[in-house]
Amino acid sequence: MSLTQSTAAERRKAEALFQQAIAAHTRWDMEVAIKKLESALKATPDNASYHIALAQMLSRAGDFDRALRALANYLRLAPDSKVADRIEQLFANGMDPVEQSLTDKMRTAQMPLDMIGAAIQMWMEFVIALGETPLAIPKPEAWSAALDYTVRKLNVRDVSLSALAEFYGVSSETVRKHHKTIVTSLDIMPCDYRYFTGTQNPLDKLVEAAELLEELEARFREE
Image 1 (cartoon, rainbow, N blue to C red):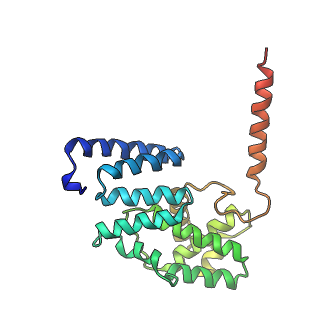
Image 2: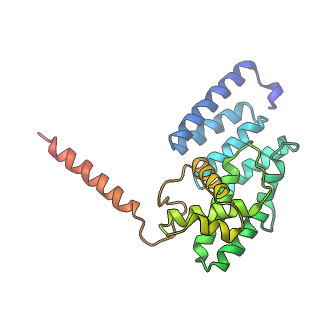
Image 3: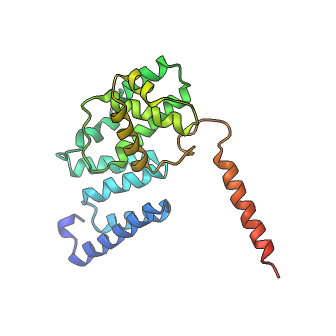
């Protein structure tokens, strides 16, 4: 069924499901978000925006294979999109300029391979998370510096923003701006499990404390 063949009622239902999926995505209920959007796509499979939104949700859920399939569907339906080149790069064999700069600089700084991998993963997820929002990359080093800075901070590694910016040959203000954009787009928290590479994540203690508090609360209220 193509979009033009969908009835008005089907399109309204699909849009309602899409809005429900967005709401679920916002509250990190990824299972519900994905199911709602897949239901919307059954009614309107030719809606390119739904496919890229599905890719965003699958990426956040860590299902990158399905996310790439959703992006392939998006490119098939919107080959002339302003973000087509950026999305197509995800299917390329080689590194893009940001990944190349990031890898070269982090290796020069003798950063661990797992942290370099986490930074590259962060970039890929960021590219997907932007959806149909265009991204200008006049200087790849600025984005690679921001990724490096973000990964170091969430892995609790001391790093000077000004020193790192100088190392990449960009301004501190640009690195700070890009860092905030990445954190906001990916909803990154301190020691975020997605990019934390250490053996013991400090967040584990918070989870244990919350579970203990919940157990103590339940016992306290027992009659």
